Image 1 (cartoon, rainbow, N blue to C red):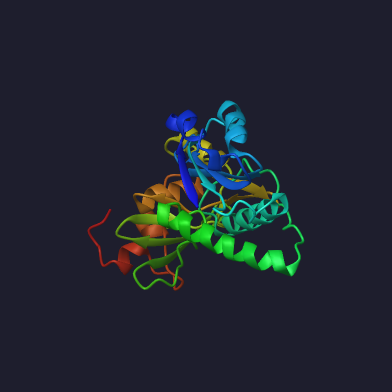
Image 2: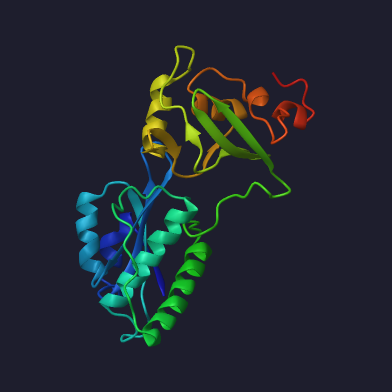
Length: 253
């Protein structure tokens, strides 16, 4: 069973008896820059645990709580196992910022008679999260989608990958982003806040932690390069053909 707990109605909802037992839960909200953010946790009593999060975690607006309808189906070892699988899959797909989860725990070693039902339980969690409209466990955009253009951009230490369609340009997780700005860069403060929020340092480079969509190719290239940029010209496909030419939009400036 999945229970949606809006933060605004938390006190009313957590009085429900079924939330006073072992559960896997996900806090959902946004970062300061409006990017999807989540925290994945486990507890033996969600009703008590959420009160602590209400005081200490400000970002979330609702919680998804996954519980068994069978009183005896899951215990502490089970929810620890489910938590590790959930964090690993969410971290792999990089759809949400997970900086509130400081560690990536290893799945609890369970006997086979418990592991198989827990794996099925987790499949239900993935399905229910998607059904509710939460994409945290969904695979990210793939560049081979025939309806999307796979694009690349480099310069100032940046090595970025993106996809473009009618909804805008999405810079893909794993892209390397310039760590600073030149004097020509517009909105320096806003850009640096995004860099701080959305990237992590890996080997001295700033690497994007999740997919980031921009309304225009130029906004995306400014973010990646840290300087003034015409994204229609600088984003290119694998053959080096600029986005402007790929779209046959010679009037785009």
